Image (cartoon, rainbow, N blue to C red):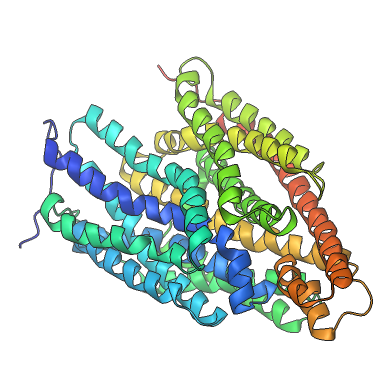
Length: 508
């Protein structure tokens, strides 16, 4: 079938368009679920594959880094070859990579599969959003369709813990990946029937060198951070940090010279864009690190099943959805700067509450504090894109929104790496294992709380109790440290919001 260029028309979308929206919403939901569901599976995965703490972070991280690294590139590629074509290719790749991940036999294989999942996932969100825009030319309908599409990202925060908990209660850890396969198969069947083709005239040319440089900047830097947290004397970690810094410098220089840059760095000259991008990046970091630590605390310290742990994460996700829905209404009466800043202070209070959680019976305080923290980030998520699109020139709105989205995705993955490394370093520094442990058991228990949980079944009861107690206490200190960092970060973000957005008035 020939590819046709779709032009905006002032006509109402019909039933086919709404069915197409449903077909597009499901894979976006799966992408969001894949961000969080593996946190629930980590304790079981650690028992089967025995990854080190650094490998655990890479298993969790590489997916988000690849999505962030390829998001803008895939958007440009879809503009050139057609978004439906790219979407369907990405869906097939995502299904295949999910099967590979589900049946991984060692940490390296799982890390590779997660990297492929991230690259495939990067095709789905920008192509889906472009197709939604094309299918709904009427502004009022388009606003509702885009809200429904983007809301699926938030829906994944709720469904992920529930779906993951149900699967892990009855099946092995790999089952959480197979959840994506039937969804992608349905998209491959429905897509050619329900979705039009869409591409952009005069689309920018993808630049593979920029993609390589961006990954060469990010991945070595993350490796260096995680290894320094593990062993501050590792010279390879310092070399990796230098390589990442050099690649980052080369990346920025190249973006300034290209006519069609991967990231338009001139956008950062706008104060509102800088503030929104920085807030999205840091919020993602704090959220990613906190969810990792809280999932491990629920399962490895409090001993909850995966299903119960997932259900206890639903109230915080609902709290965030409530404030996301309320913020646009509040923005009609109050300046966005004050709404967002207030939310950031609320988040800081929530994270400060988590520093009071204890290893024995801290569940009510943990869920309450995290719900308050998640409620506080809602205004920034709800109003951030409007601020960016309002600040950017119309011809650069697409680049601005793509860069903003990449920053948020990168932030989540970086938060898992950086704050996860900090939590792991605190754990290793704090743990005091009982005497008499076999050397191999002591090494595993001293490396991570999941390692401690894996070795205790084979120990005498007295030693097992001592290991569990020491691991729980050490991990709780790590949770307190990450929570304190997050609290300070959100106080600073509140100041940034007031300074960056103070000139933006209420919506009319």
